[in-house]
Image 1 (tube, one colour):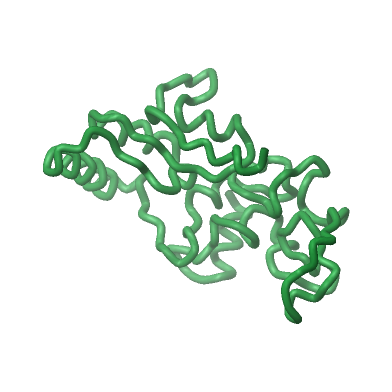
Image 2 (cartoon, rainbow, N blue to C red; image 1 turned 90 degrees about the vertical axis):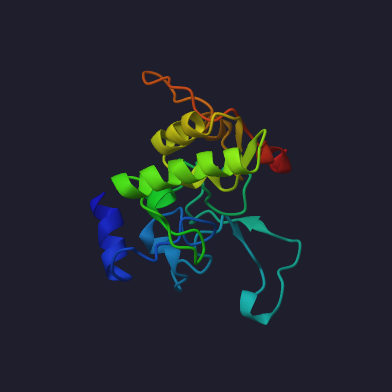
Length: 192
């Protein structure tokens, strides 16, 4: 936690403009901003052409000094990539999604209003199910509460390569073992 708050403080006041998504988010602070020592940022692959001079060729190579484990399949550290150097679940759940400010679901009034809004949408529009975008960027306890509140199946969208991380959207791992969302979109097949 200290590392997250130190990073957030360095980059602004709460809510912090910490990015929870894509390159620049899910690796150690030393990688987040390209420097001569780490020119590729949070990317797993090195590009033989300076990115400022056009697109990379197809001759990518694994960046040995980078944040990613050798067996990675994604082009940069993503949500659920626990093997990335400096990975932070807290950044995933409390960082911003691009420039969209994150709602603090742990605040009782915010949580209550979001759960009420979810139920309102289902009742008002007679919904049979809900597709929840970017589910992996919300705390599991909130996803569980939302699934219970709306009373229809929620299918959570998640673009990750870690199947265990994807599976936890539907059920907490032991010892908690609580039921989560009704389903999750299987975007990891993109990397198969």
